[in-house]
Length: 464
Image 1 (cartoon, rainbow, N blue to C red):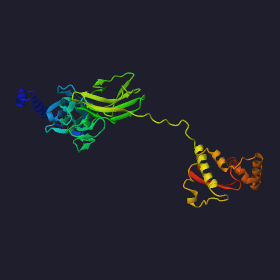
Image 2: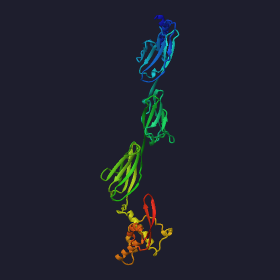
Image 3: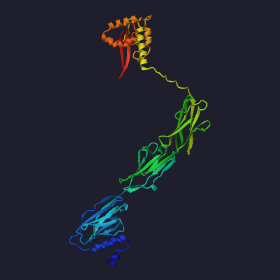
Image 4: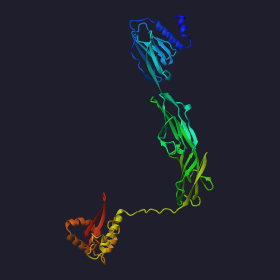
Protein backbone atom coordinates (compact mmCIF):
# COMPACT_ATOMS: atom_id res chain seq x y z
CA UNK A 1 0.00 0.00 0.00
CA UNK A 2 1.23 3.45 -0.85
CA UNK A 3 2.46 5.72 2.00
CA UNK A 4 0.07 8.39 0.82
CA UNK A 5 -2.79 6.06 1.60
CA UNK A 6 -1.59 5.54 5.18
CA UNK A 7 -1.03 9.26 5.56
CA UNK A 8 -4.53 10.01 4.35
CA UNK A 9 -6.01 7.55 6.88
CA UNK A 10 -4.23 9.22 9.83
CA UNK A 11 -2.97 7.49 12.98
CA UNK A 12 -5.28 8.74 15.71
CA UNK A 13 -7.25 5.54 16.32
CA UNK A 14 -6.44 2.03 15.28
CA UNK A 15 -10.11 1.16 14.63
CA UNK A 16 -10.48 4.19 12.34
CA UNK A 17 -7.31 3.23 10.48
CA UNK A 18 -8.71 -0.29 9.94
CA UNK A 19 -11.94 1.07 8.50
CA UNK A 20 -10.04 3.51 6.29
CA UNK A 21 -7.80 0.77 4.96
CA UNK A 22 -10.84 -1.42 4.34
CA UNK A 23 -12.32 1.47 2.26
CA UNK A 24 -9.16 1.77 0.14
CA UNK A 25 -9.28 -2.00 -0.44
CA UNK A 26 -12.82 -1.59 -1.66
CA UNK A 27 -11.79 1.22 -4.07
CA UNK A 28 -8.96 -0.90 -5.36
CA UNK A 29 -11.23 -3.84 -6.05
CA UNK A 30 -12.11 -4.65 -9.64
CA UNK A 31 -15.53 -4.16 -11.12
CA UNK A 32 -17.73 -7.01 -12.15
CA UNK A 33 -20.53 -7.33 -14.64
CA UNK A 34 -22.78 -8.45 -11.80
CA UNK A 35 -22.20 -7.12 -8.30
CA UNK A 36 -22.22 -9.29 -5.16
CA UNK A 37 -25.50 -9.72 -3.29
CA UNK A 38 -26.53 -11.16 0.07
CA UNK A 39 -28.56 -14.33 -0.31
CA UNK A 40 -30.15 -14.40 3.18
CA UNK A 41 -30.18 -12.17 6.27
CA UNK A 42 -28.05 -12.77 9.33
CA UNK A 43 -30.07 -14.49 12.05
CA UNK A 44 -30.33 -12.69 15.39
CA UNK A 45 -29.12 -14.89 18.24
CA UNK A 46 -29.82 -14.92 21.98
CA UNK A 47 -27.49 -17.09 24.02
CA UNK A 48 -26.49 -17.57 27.64
CA UNK A 49 -23.11 -16.36 28.79
CA UNK A 50 -20.40 -18.99 28.61
CA UNK A 51 -21.75 -20.67 25.49
CA UNK A 52 -20.33 -20.61 21.93
CA UNK A 53 -22.12 -18.84 19.10
CA UNK A 54 -21.75 -18.43 15.32
CA UNK A 55 -23.12 -15.88 12.83
CA UNK A 56 -23.29 -16.72 9.10
CA UNK A 57 -23.10 -14.36 6.10
CA UNK A 58 -24.03 -15.79 2.67
CA UNK A 59 -22.84 -13.77 -0.38
CA UNK A 60 -23.41 -14.63 -4.04
CA UNK A 61 -21.36 -13.33 -7.03
CA UNK A 62 -18.52 -12.23 -4.77
CA UNK A 63 -15.87 -12.32 -7.51
CA UNK A 64 -12.67 -10.57 -6.42
CA UNK A 65 -14.37 -8.62 -3.67
CA UNK A 66 -13.79 -9.49 -0.07
CA UNK A 67 -16.05 -10.16 2.98
CA UNK A 68 -15.35 -8.66 6.39
CA UNK A 69 -16.97 -9.07 9.83
CA UNK A 70 -17.17 -5.88 11.91
CA UNK A 71 -18.28 -5.27 15.52
CA UNK A 72 -20.53 -2.37 14.59
CA UNK A 73 -21.03 -0.93 18.10
CA UNK A 74 -17.27 -0.83 18.64
CA UNK A 75 -16.28 0.15 15.03
CA UNK A 76 -13.78 -2.72 15.05
CA UNK A 77 -12.92 -5.04 12.13
CA UNK A 78 -12.84 -8.61 13.38
CA UNK A 79 -12.05 -10.63 10.20
CA UNK A 80 -11.40 -10.14 6.44
CA UNK A 81 -12.04 -13.14 4.25
CA UNK A 82 -10.54 -16.03 6.23
CA UNK A 83 -8.09 -13.89 8.25
CA UNK A 84 -8.67 -12.77 11.87
CA UNK A 85 -7.76 -9.13 12.40
CA UNK A 86 -8.67 -8.68 16.10
CA UNK A 87 -6.41 -9.91 18.84
CA UNK A 88 -9.31 -11.43 20.75
CA UNK A 89 -8.46 -15.15 20.98
CA UNK A 90 -12.14 -16.07 21.25
CA UNK A 91 -12.87 -14.81 17.69
CA UNK A 92 -12.52 -17.00 14.59
CA UNK A 93 -13.85 -17.15 11.01
CA UNK A 94 -14.46 -20.00 8.56
CA UNK A 95 -15.37 -20.20 4.85
CA UNK A 96 -17.18 -23.16 3.34
CA UNK A 97 -15.31 -22.70 0.03
CA UNK A 98 -18.35 -21.45 -1.76
CA UNK A 99 -20.32 -18.43 -0.52
CA UNK A 100 -20.73 -18.61 3.28
CA UNK A 101 -18.48 -16.85 5.80
CA UNK A 102 -19.14 -17.77 9.45
CA UNK A 103 -18.01 -15.72 12.45
CA UNK A 104 -17.32 -17.82 15.58
CA UNK A 105 -17.34 -16.43 19.14
CA UNK A 106 -16.46 -18.84 21.94
CA UNK A 107 -17.40 -18.53 25.62
CA UNK A 108 -19.39 -15.36 25.07
CA UNK A 109 -19.92 -12.88 27.87
CA UNK A 110 -21.92 -9.72 28.35
CA UNK A 111 -19.31 -7.59 26.55
CA UNK A 112 -19.84 -9.57 23.35
CA UNK A 113 -23.47 -8.52 23.07
CA UNK A 114 -24.29 -6.01 20.30
CA UNK A 115 -24.68 -5.59 16.54
CA UNK A 116 -22.41 -7.40 14.09
CA UNK A 117 -22.04 -6.32 10.46
CA UNK A 118 -21.10 -8.41 7.43
CA UNK A 119 -19.73 -6.09 4.72
CA UNK A 120 -18.59 -6.56 1.10
CA UNK A 121 -16.00 -4.03 -0.13
CA UNK A 122 -17.75 -2.90 -3.26
CA UNK A 123 -17.27 0.76 -4.36
CA UNK A 124 -20.41 1.51 -2.40
CA UNK A 125 -20.01 -0.99 0.41
CA UNK A 126 -22.80 -3.48 0.86
CA UNK A 127 -23.65 -4.47 4.45
CA UNK A 128 -26.12 -6.46 6.49
CA UNK A 129 -26.51 -6.71 10.26
CA UNK A 130 -27.24 -9.30 12.93
CA UNK A 131 -27.80 -8.83 16.66
CA UNK A 132 -26.23 -10.96 19.35
CA UNK A 133 -28.02 -10.95 22.72
CA UNK A 134 -26.10 -12.44 25.63
CA UNK A 135 -28.23 -13.31 28.65
CA UNK A 136 -26.49 -13.63 31.99
CA UNK A 137 -28.00 -15.48 34.98
CA UNK A 138 -28.46 -13.45 38.15
CA UNK A 139 -25.62 -13.05 40.59
CA UNK A 140 -25.98 -11.52 44.07
CA UNK A 141 -23.13 -9.21 45.02
CA UNK A 142 -22.30 -9.97 48.64
CA UNK A 143 -20.31 -6.80 49.15
CA UNK A 144 -23.30 -4.66 48.20
CA UNK A 145 -25.92 -6.72 50.11
CA UNK A 146 -26.80 -6.96 53.80
CA UNK A 147 -25.26 -9.57 56.05
CA UNK A 148 -26.64 -11.07 59.24
CA UNK A 149 -28.23 -8.46 61.50
CA UNK A 150 -28.59 -8.29 65.30
CA UNK A 151 -30.78 -5.53 66.79
CA UNK A 152 -32.67 -4.80 69.98
CA UNK A 153 -36.41 -5.23 70.13
CA UNK A 154 -38.22 -2.10 68.93
CA UNK A 155 -35.54 -0.94 66.46
CA UNK A 156 -36.01 -0.27 62.72
CA UNK A 157 -33.88 -2.15 60.19
CA UNK A 158 -33.37 -2.10 56.40
CA UNK A 159 -32.14 -5.13 54.47
CA UNK A 160 -30.62 -4.59 51.00
CA UNK A 161 -29.85 -7.00 48.18
CA UNK A 162 -27.85 -6.16 45.02
CA UNK A 163 -27.74 -8.46 42.00
CA UNK A 164 -26.36 -8.33 38.45
CA UNK A 165 -27.48 -10.17 35.35
CA UNK A 166 -28.91 -9.71 31.88
CA UNK A 167 -31.78 -8.91 31.81
CA UNK A 168 -31.69 -7.02 35.10
CA UNK A 169 -32.81 -9.39 37.88
CA UNK A 170 -35.93 -8.82 39.97
CA UNK A 171 -35.47 -9.10 43.75
CA UNK A 172 -38.00 -10.87 46.00
CA UNK A 173 -37.89 -11.21 49.80
CA UNK A 174 -39.33 -14.15 51.73
CA UNK A 175 -39.00 -15.66 55.20
CA UNK A 176 -37.30 -19.03 55.31
CA UNK A 177 -39.92 -20.40 57.73
CA UNK A 178 -42.73 -19.35 55.30
CA UNK A 179 -44.30 -17.04 57.89
CA UNK A 180 -45.55 -13.61 56.79
CA UNK A 181 -43.22 -10.62 56.83
CA UNK A 182 -44.29 -7.86 59.25
CA UNK A 183 -43.55 -4.64 57.37
CA UNK A 184 -45.19 -2.73 60.24
CA UNK A 185 -47.75 -3.39 62.96
CA UNK A 186 -50.67 -3.47 60.52
CA UNK A 187 -49.25 -4.68 57.19
CA UNK A 188 -48.04 -8.24 56.61
CA UNK A 189 -47.08 -9.94 53.35
CA UNK A 190 -45.90 -13.38 52.28
CA UNK A 191 -43.47 -11.90 49.71
CA UNK A 192 -42.03 -8.45 49.17
CA UNK A 193 -40.58 -7.19 45.86
CA UNK A 194 -37.75 -4.69 45.80
CA UNK A 195 -34.03 -4.35 46.40
CA UNK A 196 -34.61 -3.03 49.96
CA UNK A 197 -36.76 -4.47 52.73
CA UNK A 198 -37.64 -2.16 55.63
CA UNK A 199 -38.90 -3.57 58.93
CA UNK A 200 -40.35 -1.11 61.46
CA UNK A 201 -40.17 -1.62 65.23
CA UNK A 202 -39.05 -5.23 65.07
CA UNK A 203 -40.15 -7.68 67.76
CA UNK A 204 -39.15 -11.21 68.67
CA UNK A 205 -41.72 -12.47 66.16
CA UNK A 206 -39.64 -10.86 63.38
CA UNK A 207 -36.60 -12.93 64.33
CA UNK A 208 -36.01 -15.29 61.40
CA UNK A 209 -33.87 -16.00 58.35
CA UNK A 210 -34.86 -13.80 55.39
CA UNK A 211 -34.16 -14.90 51.80
CA UNK A 212 -33.18 -12.41 49.09
CA UNK A 213 -34.12 -14.15 45.81
CA UNK A 214 -32.88 -12.88 42.42
CA UNK A 215 -34.36 -14.08 39.12
CA UNK A 216 -34.36 -12.81 35.54
CA UNK A 217 -35.68 -15.77 33.57
CA UNK A 218 -32.20 -17.19 33.00
CA UNK A 219 -31.47 -20.20 35.17
CA UNK A 220 -30.40 -20.66 37.82
CA UNK A 221 -32.34 -18.58 40.36
CA UNK A 222 -30.04 -17.50 43.18
CA UNK A 223 -30.69 -16.42 46.74
CA UNK A 224 -28.91 -15.15 49.83
CA UNK A 225 -29.86 -15.98 53.42
CA UNK A 226 -29.80 -13.11 55.92
CA UNK A 227 -30.38 -13.93 59.59
CA UNK A 228 -32.17 -11.29 61.65
CA UNK A 229 -31.68 -11.69 65.41
CA UNK A 230 -33.70 -9.63 67.89
CA UNK A 231 -32.31 -9.31 71.42
CA UNK A 232 -34.59 -8.85 74.45
CA UNK A 233 -34.45 -9.59 78.21
CA UNK A 234 -36.01 -12.82 79.56
CA UNK A 235 -39.75 -13.01 79.98
CA UNK A 236 -41.50 -15.78 81.93
CA UNK A 237 -44.95 -17.36 82.06
CA UNK A 238 -46.09 -19.84 84.74
CA UNK A 239 -49.23 -21.92 84.07
CA UNK A 240 -49.85 -22.76 87.77
CA UNK A 241 -48.48 -20.50 90.50
CA UNK A 242 -50.25 -22.36 93.33
CA UNK A 243 -49.81 -26.15 93.30
CA UNK A 244 -51.10 -28.67 95.87
CA UNK A 245 -49.99 -32.25 96.46
CA UNK A 246 -50.34 -34.78 99.34
CA UNK A 247 -47.52 -36.20 101.41
CA UNK A 248 -45.51 -38.98 99.80
CA UNK A 249 -46.55 -38.07 96.27
CA UNK A 250 -44.39 -36.62 93.45
CA UNK A 251 -45.26 -33.31 91.78
CA UNK A 252 -43.99 -31.40 88.72
CA UNK A 253 -43.65 -27.60 88.56
CA UNK A 254 -43.49 -25.84 85.16
CA UNK A 255 -42.46 -22.49 83.67
CA UNK A 256 -41.88 -21.15 80.13
CA UNK A 257 -39.12 -18.65 79.28
CA UNK A 258 -38.61 -16.40 76.23
CA UNK A 259 -35.21 -14.76 75.82
CA UNK A 260 -32.55 -13.84 73.25
CA UNK A 261 -29.67 -14.40 73.54
CA UNK A 262 -30.63 -17.74 75.17
CA UNK A 263 -30.91 -17.39 78.93
CA UNK A 264 -29.16 -19.21 81.76
CA UNK A 265 -31.99 -20.99 83.61
CA UNK A 266 -32.24 -22.78 86.97
CA UNK A 267 -34.53 -23.49 89.97
CA UNK A 268 -34.05 -22.17 93.53
CA UNK A 269 -35.72 -22.24 96.96
CA UNK A 270 -34.97 -21.23 100.56
CA UNK A 271 -33.17 -17.91 100.12
CA UNK A 272 -31.86 -18.66 96.62
CA UNK A 273 -30.37 -22.14 97.12
CA UNK A 274 -29.97 -23.65 93.63
CA UNK A 275 -31.55 -27.06 93.08
CA UNK A 276 -29.56 -29.75 91.28
CA UNK A 277 -30.44 -32.93 89.45
CA UNK A 278 -30.49 -35.96 91.74
CA UNK A 279 -32.62 -38.52 93.53
CA UNK A 280 -34.86 -35.83 95.01
CA UNK A 281 -35.16 -33.48 92.02
CA UNK A 282 -35.52 -34.19 88.29
CA UNK A 283 -34.93 -31.11 86.09
CA UNK A 284 -35.66 -30.95 82.36
CA UNK A 285 -35.52 -28.25 79.66
CA UNK A 286 -37.23 -28.59 76.29
CA UNK A 287 -36.93 -26.20 73.31
CA UNK A 288 -40.16 -24.46 72.39
CA UNK A 289 -41.96 -23.99 69.10
CA UNK A 290 -39.74 -20.98 68.30
CA UNK A 291 -36.01 -20.61 68.81
CA UNK A 292 -36.25 -18.09 71.66
CA UNK A 293 -38.66 -20.16 73.85
CA UNK A 294 -37.74 -22.80 76.47
CA UNK A 295 -39.99 -25.01 78.63
CA UNK A 296 -38.64 -25.90 82.10
CA UNK A 297 -39.90 -28.61 84.48
CA UNK A 298 -38.96 -29.49 88.07
CA UNK A 299 -40.19 -32.82 89.47
CA UNK A 300 -40.03 -33.23 93.27
CA UNK A 301 -40.18 -36.87 94.39
CA UNK A 302 -41.71 -38.30 97.61
CA UNK A 303 -42.91 -35.09 99.20
CA UNK A 304 -42.08 -34.61 102.91
CA UNK A 305 -43.82 -32.13 105.18
CA UNK A 306 -40.74 -30.57 106.73
CA UNK A 307 -38.56 -30.22 103.63
CA UNK A 308 -40.57 -29.90 100.42
CA UNK A 309 -43.56 -27.59 100.86
CA UNK A 310 -43.21 -23.87 100.31
CA UNK A 311 -42.07 -21.44 97.56
CA UNK A 312 -39.96 -22.40 94.53
CA UNK A 313 -38.42 -19.99 91.98
CA UNK A 314 -37.79 -20.40 88.26
CA UNK A 315 -34.90 -18.05 87.29
CA UNK A 316 -33.64 -16.88 83.85
CA UNK A 317 -30.73 -14.52 83.00
CA UNK A 318 -29.11 -13.23 79.81
CA UNK A 319 -27.02 -10.24 78.73
CA UNK A 320 -30.16 -8.08 78.41
CA UNK A 321 -31.56 -8.71 81.89
CA UNK A 322 -33.03 -11.31 84.24
CA UNK A 323 -36.39 -12.43 85.63
CA UNK A 324 -37.83 -14.99 88.03
CA UNK A 325 -41.20 -16.60 88.71
CA UNK A 326 -42.61 -17.85 92.02
CA UNK A 327 -44.52 -21.13 92.48
CA UNK A 328 -45.95 -22.07 95.89
CA UNK A 329 -46.33 -25.77 96.77
CA UNK A 330 -48.79 -26.62 99.57
CA UNK A 331 -50.05 -29.83 101.18
CA UNK A 332 -53.42 -31.39 100.28
CA UNK A 333 -55.38 -34.41 101.47
CA UNK A 334 -54.79 -37.71 99.63
CA UNK A 335 -57.40 -38.49 96.98
CA UNK A 336 -60.32 -40.80 97.88
CA UNK A 337 -59.54 -44.37 96.75
CA UNK A 338 -61.61 -45.76 93.92
CA UNK A 339 -63.75 -48.84 94.85
CA UNK A 340 -61.96 -52.03 93.89
CA UNK A 341 -65.21 -53.88 92.95
CA UNK A 342 -67.67 -51.40 91.45
CA UNK A 343 -71.22 -52.75 90.91
CA UNK A 344 -71.72 -54.42 87.57
CA UNK A 345 -74.42 -53.68 85.05
CA UNK A 346 -76.36 -56.80 86.05
CA UNK A 347 -76.21 -55.76 89.70
CA UNK A 348 -77.82 -52.45 88.81
CA UNK A 349 -80.35 -54.16 86.53
CA UNK A 350 -81.69 -56.59 89.13
CA UNK A 351 -81.60 -54.07 91.98
CA UNK A 352 -83.90 -51.81 90.00
CA UNK A 353 -85.92 -54.88 89.00
CA UNK A 354 -86.52 -55.50 92.69
CA UNK A 355 -87.63 -51.87 93.10
CA UNK A 356 -90.17 -52.18 90.27
CA UNK A 357 -91.63 -55.48 91.41
CA UNK A 358 -92.07 -54.32 94.99
CA UNK A 359 -93.87 -51.22 93.79
CA UNK A 360 -96.29 -53.19 91.56
CA UNK A 361 -96.85 -56.29 93.71
CA UNK A 362 -96.27 -55.56 97.36
CA UNK A 363 -97.36 -51.94 97.16
CA UNK A 364 -100.90 -52.70 95.82
CA UNK A 365 -103.85 -54.64 97.09
CA UNK A 366 -104.50 -58.23 96.14
CA UNK A 367 -105.65 -58.46 92.54
CA UNK A 368 -104.83 -54.83 91.71
CA UNK A 369 -102.57 -53.94 88.80
CA UNK A 370 -101.03 -50.63 87.82
CA UNK A 371 -102.51 -48.63 84.99
CA UNK A 372 -99.70 -48.60 82.41
CA UNK A 373 -101.28 -45.71 80.56
CA UNK A 374 -101.16 -43.45 83.63
CA UNK A 375 -97.63 -41.95 84.07
CA UNK A 376 -98.43 -40.90 87.60
CA UNK A 377 -99.14 -44.50 88.56
CA UNK A 378 -96.16 -45.91 86.73
CA UNK A 379 -93.69 -43.44 88.18
CA UNK A 380 -90.83 -41.55 86.49
CA UNK A 381 -88.27 -44.25 87.26
CA UNK A 382 -89.90 -47.02 85.22
CA UNK A 383 -87.55 -46.51 82.28
CA UNK A 384 -84.32 -46.54 84.31
CA UNK A 385 -81.70 -49.22 83.84
CA UNK A 386 -82.40 -51.84 86.54
CA UNK A 387 -79.97 -52.78 89.31
CA UNK A 388 -79.28 -56.40 90.32
CA UNK A 389 -78.96 -58.08 93.41
CA UNK A 390 -81.66 -57.94 96.03
CA UNK A 391 -83.70 -60.94 94.90
CA UNK A 392 -83.60 -62.23 98.45
CA UNK A 393 -85.49 -59.11 99.54
CA UNK A 394 -88.15 -59.89 96.93
CA UNK A 395 -88.49 -63.37 98.34
CA UNK A 396 -88.78 -62.04 101.87
CA UNK A 397 -91.50 -59.58 100.86
CA UNK A 398 -93.51 -62.16 98.87
CA UNK A 399 -93.28 -65.00 101.41
CA UNK A 400 -96.48 -65.77 103.32
CA UNK A 401 -96.42 -65.48 107.04
CA UNK A 402 -94.88 -68.86 107.74
CA UNK A 403 -92.38 -71.13 106.05
CA UNK A 404 -93.32 -72.85 102.81
CA UNK A 405 -93.60 -76.61 102.89
CA UNK A 406 -91.71 -78.20 99.95
CA UNK A 407 -94.69 -80.34 98.99
CA UNK A 408 -97.00 -77.30 98.95
CA UNK A 409 -94.58 -75.38 96.69
CA UNK A 410 -94.37 -78.30 94.24
CA UNK A 411 -98.16 -78.59 93.96
CA UNK A 412 -98.53 -74.83 93.41
CA UNK A 413 -96.01 -74.83 90.57
CA UNK A 414 -97.70 -77.83 88.88
CA UNK A 415 -101.06 -76.02 89.04
CA UNK A 416 -99.55 -72.93 87.40
CA UNK A 417 -97.98 -74.96 84.57
CA UNK A 418 -101.31 -76.60 83.82
CA UNK A 419 -103.04 -73.18 83.70
CA UNK A 420 -100.56 -71.81 81.11
CA UNK A 421 -100.31 -73.05 77.58
CA UNK A 422 -97.18 -74.81 76.22
CA UNK A 423 -95.96 -71.67 74.46
CA UNK A 424 -96.24 -69.58 77.64
CA UNK A 425 -94.49 -72.32 79.58
CA UNK A 426 -91.50 -72.19 77.23
CA UNK A 427 -91.25 -68.39 77.38
CA UNK A 428 -91.85 -68.14 81.10
CA UNK A 429 -89.46 -70.85 82.21
CA UNK A 430 -86.61 -68.40 82.65
CA UNK A 431 -88.64 -66.01 84.76
CA UNK A 432 -90.14 -68.75 86.95
CA UNK A 433 -86.92 -69.01 88.91
CA UNK A 434 -86.97 -65.29 89.60
CA UNK A 435 -90.62 -64.77 90.40
CA UNK A 436 -91.49 -68.09 92.00
CA UNK A 437 -91.71 -66.20 95.26
CA UNK A 438 -94.64 -64.06 94.01
CA UNK A 439 -98.15 -64.90 95.04
CA UNK A 440 -100.14 -67.01 92.61
CA UNK A 441 -102.50 -65.11 90.39
CA UNK A 442 -100.67 -61.77 90.64
CA UNK A 443 -99.77 -59.70 87.63
CA UNK A 444 -96.28 -58.22 87.52
CA UNK A 445 -95.38 -55.37 85.11
CA UNK A 446 -91.64 -55.06 84.50
CA UNK A 447 -90.06 -52.18 82.57
CA UNK A 448 -86.71 -53.32 81.10
CA UNK A 449 -84.14 -51.79 78.77
CA UNK A 450 -82.28 -53.57 76.01
CA UNK A 451 -79.15 -51.80 74.76
CA UNK A 452 -78.51 -53.15 71.26
CA UNK A 453 -78.22 -50.51 68.54
CA UNK A 454 -80.16 -47.87 70.42
CA UNK A 455 -81.89 -47.77 73.77
CA UNK A 456 -85.27 -49.56 73.40
CA UNK A 457 -87.60 -49.59 76.39
CA UNK A 458 -89.71 -52.76 76.68
CA UNK A 459 -92.50 -53.37 79.23
CA UNK A 460 -92.99 -57.07 79.91
CA UNK A 461 -96.25 -58.33 81.42
CA UNK A 462 -95.97 -61.49 83.50
CA UNK A 463 -98.92 -63.40 84.79
CA UNK A 464 -97.80 -65.41 87.80
